[in-house]
Image (tube, rainbow, N blue to C red; front, side, top):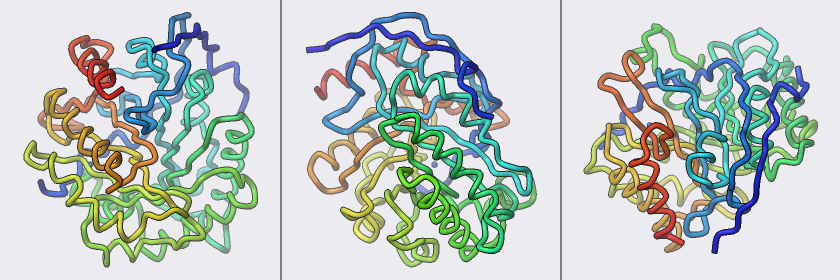
Length: 345
């Protein structure tokens, strides 16, 4: 039986604070758009966070950086009546520019009102300045922001630092900029990840560190980027099947990673996923079922799932790719998702 409550959200401005080959999808979305505010109108919303077959489920709402319309988590909730369990957000540390967390603080109203697990993907763009043993100023700045967030009473705050590093340190031929998004090599990443983890352990001990490489079945490659257990709370790996025929390959693709790195000490989560082709909503739900069914059977157990709910249009993607499982402008897609959720209850 569904129970409903009436929720009302205050504007975030009131809160003071200063991707079957393993081809990767377009990465324009990683630069989260400028902070925005939204106001929720009262609407019946389920009182419990959404779990599909017992797995907490949520979204990375579109921030418009791939050409789609900006979404707020509240938009998705209003369209579905579901209180989503996770909320993902991208942010960047840009060299020596002091990190102030504007991309994070700009969505606080949404996250606070829904009481979701807050998953922050923090990208060290073009520099490791302030992310080393000799100079940890950017790590300290980031962890002070994480402390602010954990003090606000979120169910959990997860920091996914340097996600997809094995892609982003080798993407110069794909990103149109002629240089890699993340500089340096695996050693630079390891130092940066551990520096952030140490700072947060001291400043924001409640924050959970997430290690999240890009898709690979080569465990030897992945081990080059493994920070080691003391620095990691959750493990994740990003994959966007780019052919319909790949949808059924989820377990085959993830099992080497899962067997090597997931454990009781650092459980597996799906921190972002979708289809890297313009599949139908049925295709998307078929892929989601692969993840859920594997977890339910105890083979690849996922502690949560966060779906990449973006629209990419040229130049971010050519042809256009609609990743969305909930689309406030397409009731057919949204209703199919809701029917799916009900069928798994």
